[in-house]
Length: 89
Image (tube, rainbow, N blue to C red):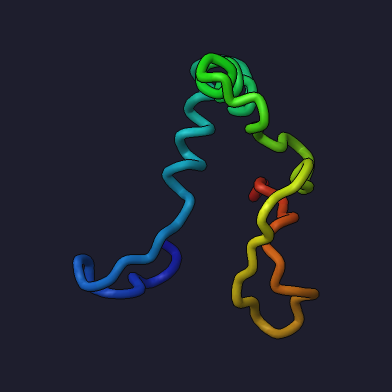
């Protein structure tokens, strides 16, 4: 690991998206199709979730939606986390 451990295991919790990121990569590697395609065809469509979708390459959310905010460091343009790229590549 490049960075030191933030705290003693079992004393605190820090949520990261790494598990979701790795799961998405595995789904794409195993199926040969995008995570977006697999979630849409295997989960969203079969259960009738017509207004739910994965944004793909877009950072915009279609239609009416809640706006998320988070604390950001000085120098960032704003604290809105609603329109945010979902890729770290």
